[in-house]
Image (cartoon, rainbow, N blue to C red; front, side):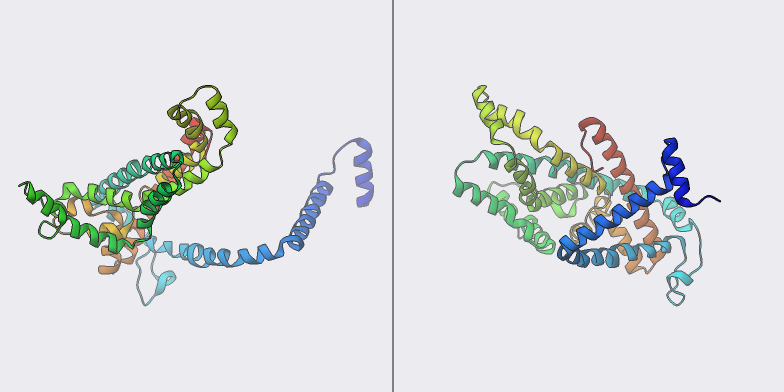
Length: 331
């Protein structure tokens, strides 16, 4: 058997590339680069350990408990000791008469939130970007940004007080002109509007900050060139501002569609009452009632896993479409 060095010499003389030797050199070069990077930036790597540990402990490790969706969970036997039942809980959810209503309510509410909350921050950011009065601009930013830091419970309490047929100032205002106040909170057809527009009020200013940051990074030379060409303010917004923030908007849209079935539980549950269950009962509130109130953890896990799979499929589809249409995507 020829020695290793002889093989490499023969391969070199014949013009062939020694695959094993190339891989070893590439691996050694990679390790040297990693060691050099560690010596140069070891403080940053240590700083990353805490968030990485948080993700591993609280995000990835709990994923293993998703096996509950395929088991009949018993507290005494534990997660891994409980018997396997396959797709029993998924089939039970699909056969449930309320399943279609839950999916429809969740999809419609999430889609409504996305359609309303996606363009409004962009419009707000474009308008603020055109304001040259510093005090007015900062005041508007503060007024629109502050609601984001209000607790969801407080927002819902404010909403109930404002729209109450007996105590709300909307009722008082309508009473002045002789118009009777409808029970907005007790009618199913109004639930989605109340949920969505209270959410827009709470999050629009915060979401606009992302677009303001993207607008701040636009090359001033583009504005100067547009002015030289005689472009009006609206034309500069159309041909300079909007194309410049489009990559950011596409990424946010993809992430929003990826969470279209993961609508927040807190506000829907707090605004929910027996009179509006027809539209307010969504997958998140159903999982809470089945899993925690009825202690059917396996069924709740199956429904939650179904919801997550739908979100993942939507995220992949929208990313592919956005990549083909605009050339921008998450990956």
